[in-house]
Length: 318
Length: 300
Image 1 (cartoon, rainbow over the protein chains, first blue to last red):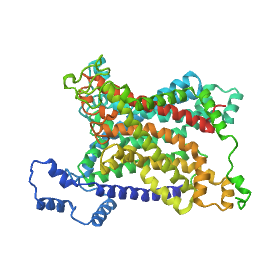
Image 2 (image 1 turned 90 degrees about the vertical axis):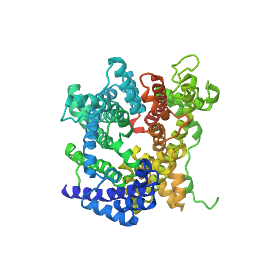
Image 3 (image 1 turned 135 degrees about the horizontal axis):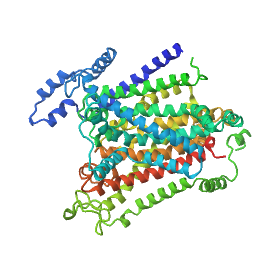
Image 4 (image 1 turned 180 degrees about the horizontal axis):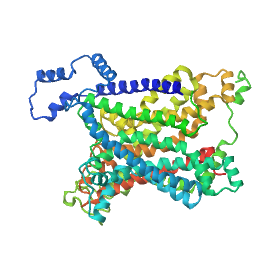
């Protein structure tokens, strides 16, 4: 087991290295850099080359690309993400609040998705090919079809028309005022969670269908066990493995993937930060963000695999 | 062709009456998958609307009518007008062209390239497989939208670049799925037979392996169309996709639609409905197709 964990941890390194290289290369291919962007948005119309060069030298952008790459790698090795090229603030500081916000929305959306997906998926599997099954499938496919940013617009509009109430538009951290915080973040969580419940619902349905055909279910029925008990003890437990995977991986993507929804709900999360960072050509911040999102995904993936062995004793890793 | 050993017959087997079998399959699909038929019909309808947009439109989708800005749905403008006085109904019709172009373009490109890579990776195995897999891992560890955004910022906006931006993150997703089916096919006797008959790698990959991963390929393809339409809408909504004044659904939701959500809800509601219905149709069809093609889930 320890060997397996070590092997997996070691295997993360090439993937993360690949992500780091990929984002580094992509950023250098982008036309323009942070200095140009800053002067383009500033007031001073007359910028001479000297000022640009001085600014570039300050940020280390005058060094050859391979040198910049070595600096970047060196920083990563020391777990030092450096400072944002745009604001000059340490990147950890830039990320902190946004990460808390994105994490909270992702957790809430995952809860919404799970609460919808598991009961609906089980129901659809039990009533396969009846109108219940069709209704559940239409409901979940509809969730997959609606852009969550549009669902967000409709939600806000609905609240406004029906209750003459708008959710607060300014972020309050959970530890400052939980009520204020939840009444803002529940709406994006619902809009996103509904969408993400679709995949999990479908997975629950098909996993249940597969398990319900197993011999041990027939045996349990034959010995006269309560249907309720068969479902909860025998069927659901065995069907949960793939569902768990899907939910966990979606959670990982939710952390950084809510770029558009955050825009609609005026949330200052990681997705919005990514759009800004890339628009500002803020190399250091973009690199840090992409690495953060990829690390989250890879780590969650790893944890899911570990959980497999824990939940299903038949699975052993070597 | 006398040189060909008899094993050729074994390797290049094609059951008689493939056409008839295919038709049978369609008939069975229609009978057993009512939801899929609804989805298919909606896709056909969408294609017809896109093709006949100039005939069905009541106004020029690009023409500004400054006398009728933000006017509500009525006899003159069936679904109202936007902040520039453009007819929402006509723009919706023309928007279906953008959606279908990007949707099909990106998914056909992405799924096909992904299938070829996936099959090649499984067929050759060994070091190539390992390297390709690590490469795919890198792409798979990032959300679709982040990758698409990065690509579109580099390439620039516009329909063609948006198609490429959506294609790139889709390739590894399809490659992954196709590879796992191809791994099983590689062990089949007919592949050994083809190899024994002395066929080249290219022929085995294209004639023997690819046709046998058609099921996962088609499933991925239909699933991708919906996703691609959604991604295009997201990119356009962010202002990084198709550019004004082109009629595109995501673009119609951008900016003014949110600003005027209360006073002119038709601007925001109808394009969103169009996106949802189009993606819904493709997903419904794709879902039923998967059930029909994946024998493990087939209803007994």
